[in-house]
Length: 138
Image (cartoon, rainbow, N blue to C red):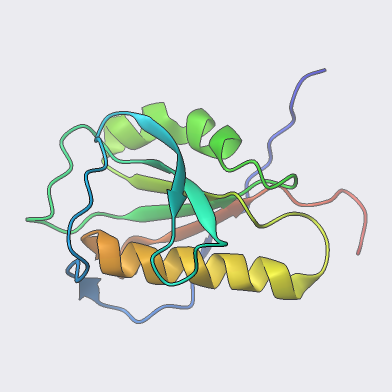
């Protein structure tokens, strides 16, 4: 069964700023899909991650926050990692956000956003949200 992936890109509601990382650097291998990164503020929240192989905290990077309907962050990150490598984007995919009530989805999005801001040199002027949305009205 083919996986149909539709993306809706929107500018996130974030401060228009370039945020230097403020958390102590954890050894996260660039150029490799990492299936589970636990957020520093909430150990119940995690995400899949792809950092471009030339990632360096010495400059800011655009970021894509991806959401899978089944809370499988690895799926959208895997689908976007080649483009992320080519165009120099960081990609995070929530392992907690799934189709359903908005509160858990909002909490997952906030956890990823806050963790990315503390852990990576991200450019919030170029961030994107991406997700697979239901075909029917909710």
